[in-house]
Length: 315
Image (tube, rainbow, N blue to C red; front, side, top):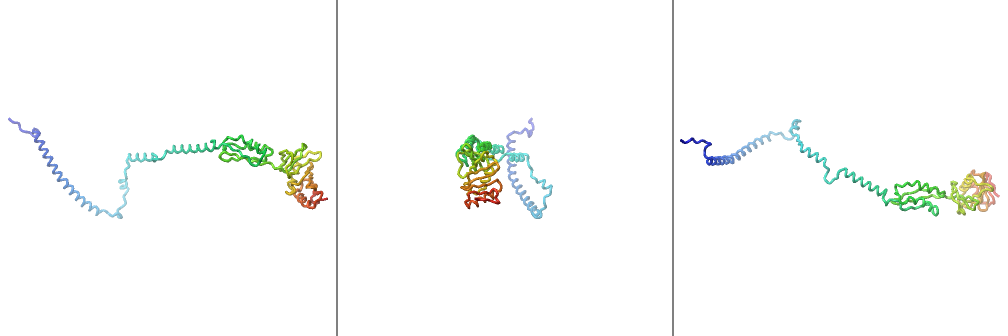
């Protein structure tokens, strides 16, 4: 007796053949139906879209978006985008050095320039020049400044050398000037004699306008009046000050002709101008007395007494 044939007991080959036939039919059906459906849907969308575009208000009449609408369409920032933007901000631009490196380079440049200007061999004192004096005084000033040779030009203190040069009584003042890159100029102001004081040793001592006795010489310079001490007296500094005031008050054309200048400790002054003897008297009213001498010398007198300038006497 044969068993009834069941669907699951059918042979495999016919089933595969049927499946293949069914699949082919369904594929042909889809290939034909899908384009038709798309065309119908597109036509429907076109008609509906055109109707919607016709009903849509113009841009001028379109209402402003509400807060809810603005919130709805606010761009969403993802975590990846935020991380990427933060990373781009932290990263230095391509081709630029980090700030610390820039600061280090600038500091190195500044320190290098400072070393070149302050400590390098190029800016150490090499040349020393003395201005304002000559001879022995120049040599003395240069010798005192020679100790600065080889020291940094801009870092060396010059006050001590200036004070050492001014210890020379022939020097009225001294100043040192830095001349970049490696020179030092010593400016020396010498004392200018206005009178000479005769000494017993056969020499004369030069005295400047401040009354400073600064140098002994064998003979006074030309045009310098020589002060002779009074008999039996030692000329004091006060007497020398009076002699300086008298000579300074004389006109330039007469100052170089004053000889035999004598000042007593009582501050009585006498001198000669050429062959004329002048009794000056004390140190009062020196300007008036100097004018009287210039006027009375035109008479070529042997003596002029202006100790009382209101009543001058000539012989």
